[in-house]
Image 1 (spheres, rainbow, N blue to C red):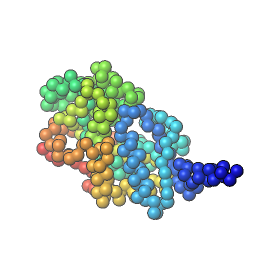
Image 2 (image 1 turned 30 degrees about the vertical axis):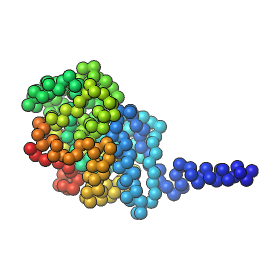
Image 3 (image 1 turned 90 degrees about the vertical axis):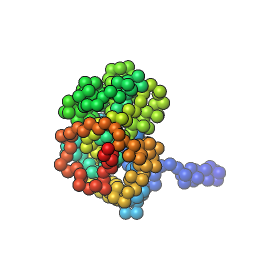
Image 4 (image 1 turned 135 degrees about the vertical axis):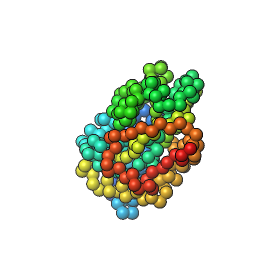
Length: 289
């Protein structure tokens, strides 16, 4: 009996479950193995929570059992099944939820690299004007704000319901390219491990498109904590340093490597007037050629 009691006591001491004083923050489950950027978000959220622990207390991130699309994630946020979600922003999302207006990638999510089939490299090398790219078809998420931005700017889009289908559709030739953000593209292509796909970073699509954390309208304390922590990390340069070190994003640095790229600038008409464009500490830039 004493041995059993000791075993139970040790199990409780080393249990992965949070203590009664520890706040539990539930996030959505990883959608697919191709979503390499998932680890970046989890690691960054944990860094913010650790950075703000002295003022707000201990907290831990746990994954929901739900593997969900962007559209459903916002619904689950309202129902309290998850506590926060990361997504590209638009005016409607910022109206319906609390946006933490600190770009998680320094605004570099709006710098898009076409992922193409290796056999298309010569074709894409010949592209010098936006009109040539507009004649081709981009794969994008059905409910992603990017799809609206591309279409508003005259680009052809094949809307796809699930992330895991997009690379498959690209391989099958059902679209010509899959535009991915600078912070995502290299880790994704490396994770797929396919020699038939190339991140063609001699061309960039550029538009203002910050990736934010979102919480429900009722989550004021969590919103304050996340905003305070992220702002401090961004304004002290720690967020940029985190990006330079993290396995998902380190391959995009130094940003000077893109100085010779053809950059096609798009307008984002769904960008909120509350976007903190004047706070230069929040934004990273590709140096002009």
